[in-house]
Amino acid sequence: MCMDKKIDKIKDIYKAFETEAAAYKENAVCSKGCAYCCTDAGSIDITTLEGLVILKKVRSLLRPQQVKVNKALAGDFKKKEKGERSACPFLMKNKACMIYEIRPFSCRRIYSVHVCNQDNPPMLSRQVIKMAEKTIRELQILDDTGYSGHISYIMHMLKTPKFLSTYLTGEHKPEEVMAFGKTHHIVINLNVSGSMKNKEMVK
Image (cartoon, rainbow, N blue to C red; front, side, top):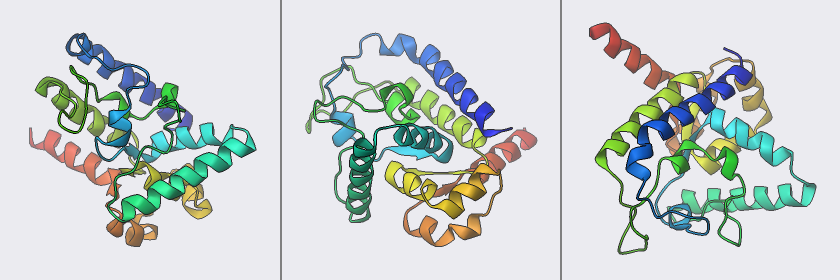
């Protein structure tokens, strides 16, 4: 499947999750400017395919904006390497998301039925958590020649010309990213895809 078709498929996967989880989100209090999940809820993980969508968006921005985003990504990268808390690089000063329309599933799956803070982290149903786990596997299987990991790590990989070239041609060369992958906890999506197929065969 070509990259453009895979990107279209991402939208279908997002939509299916939103439809399935809609009833559980009716009492969500999330709104624009509520950015706890963007600053304190944990790692924002993405697949390389989601990262490719974000990369295209970044490259469409005006040069000053691109510089600002890339600086924020680099800062997040360094903080995460040190194990420090870091706000999402795409969170703007007004607490709105710069890439809201194309935000990754990591952001789409989180909601809360109460206002969040340090003492009250997001609260969502177990059913939605299970739906999200299933959706993450679907995204990884779709992106079977790619990887999953923290947003700034994946964006770093995609901005590496050699890696991007290999990825765009549909080739899969995990040995080229093995050293970085081990130190930055990068998941090989093909391993997820393979394990799921094995489970289906066992059934």
